[in-house]
Image 1: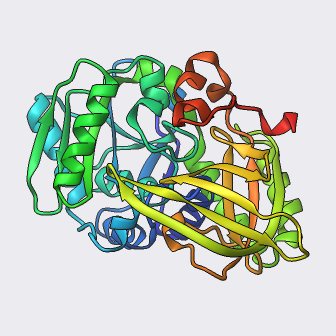
Image 2 (image 1 turned 90 degrees about the horizontal axis):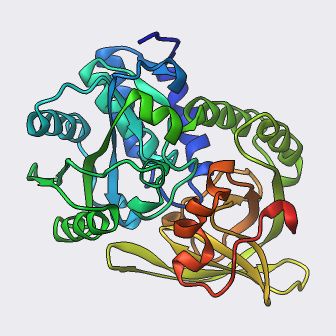
Length: 364
């Protein structure tokens, strides 16, 4: 395995900021995971960030992250040991040494927990992830769509209880892992989707960790009104795995209704325009899925819908949204992987129960 770059303590704030933007409202609040990552990097040193094409085909890779309802992450707080202990439990269960760790999603806290595990184990983290954003269910990961089996997998709860999983398919795994998360208070850490280095090269959305750091630095450097930062955001996305980045709407949150249903944060919010424009409604299942104005779909999953504070352009997780907040709605075209027929079968609006097909942001 050739090694290229590192994630240091100095990168964490930018990684946190950039990954919240890409998380489309989900992925878990990053504040405490960022503190855990900082402590891990101070104790163990920088983590090697390895590009997917630098992996050996024989490397043994596992995806690691948190599963549950993001709202719970504000109360059921992780400890510094959870990610590393989950990795160790996975190695004990499988009898195999993991060579590199991959992220489920480039989203909020789930971008930082793999870093904590990698630091403690002294192994690299892959520069990429299984979504290019955040999505609520296991079968929506690029790893699963490309054909990786989700198990053997190991999950750990806040009290240190562990469970091992072996299922016939990803849909079954999603039901089982979600049930365990609900029984364990709503949030667990899992190590799953074991893959070879050769396989993950074909399945991962590449370079999203380094891009999240780059994006976070743009958000921090040009912090200010959304109208002022948009040219810098467009330029940042231009040379990425994503498509175009567009400002859709500006307004004030006048309604939000979210409940934990089946282990997910499910609900809807409404943003009223400042000048009497028809309001925009956003459907939520952990992440922002659909942005709609009257009967017109402005943007939909798998494209990214992002809410930012209108004055600072700081991205806002769904669980942090409040009545009266002044926000801007931004949309980003998803990576090409998710535009394939195979991917859209599990991530299009119809996969979430909406009665319409995906229309790319670039087609609006």
